[in-house]
Image (cartoon, rainbow, N blue to C red; front, side, top):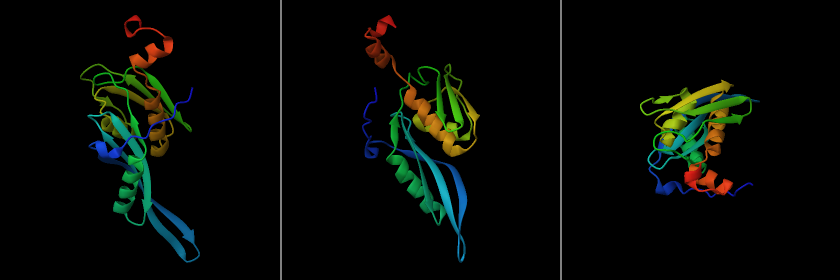
Length: 169
């Protein structure tokens, strides 16, 4: 049953931005090559467990980062957490990329590669084990991570779907 996602207001969070990758791209035109920069940015408020990603492209790096931040603020997702980790193991997919997220014990830290680490720290997850499978393209890895985070369910949701009390689970 698809639910209509309510857009989160970026103004009510203390969002911190993190640049995941900057790529120099060229477009070949009649007069030569047009050089520009593409930036992939993750924004998040660890206190509120809110995270988003976006990409921007511009002639200079700072403008590309700024555009990426603006795009990320329009694409925020609330993450279901249990204290400092995720509630259950989950596998996110996007294209040929897969990201496996596993809950971890207190004191483990964020065991993750670059793109997944940026998302996890921005979301406020303090203890998690991750494995990126397939592609290493940061765009696809981040989208697979967001797919996994979107699949996370808390105990109240599962109890409501099963028609049981939270204590029965």
